[in-house]
Image (cartoon, rainbow, N blue to C red; front, side, top):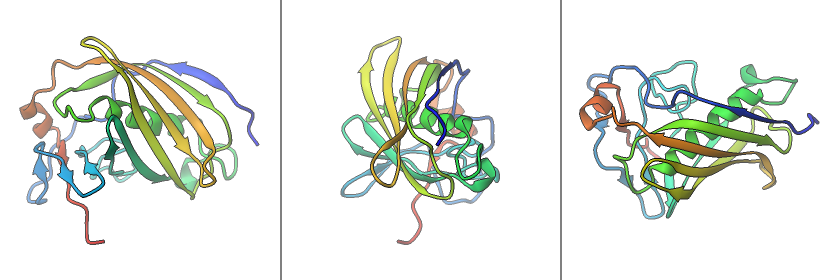
Length: 192
């Protein structure tokens, strides 16, 4: 088992990545989230490492609002992203936490765009590769100039593999039109 580590990384931003929307994909650009009885699907980007649907090296994860101020997804970290054998690289785990915590900041306010100012990650247990992991983000505090959120990567047995606190600040440069240019859209889930 890898001993717990603690680090703090500043980030210039996340998720709304430079890309172009796919043509004829049938996806709704920006638009309203897609709701099901128990969850609301959030938009994806085209090229984001974590949620980009056109990034062949990324995860292409879908995120869902599952409760007030809560967003989650299920992720399987491929073996190619391991650090020690069978254990996910810490940077990959941090990327998942960065994404889910930023998404928690916009639950219920899709126009509220944020950029990471500070991400504090604590590794509590080895996070395995090739294993379904529940990744959950929750809003802690929303203010006009800064928002705080908390994220967790939960192991199959329910233990916390890693957790993070995020402080972010508003991104005033992301209009609906700019988000659409970048490929930010809600993509309907495929057949169940």
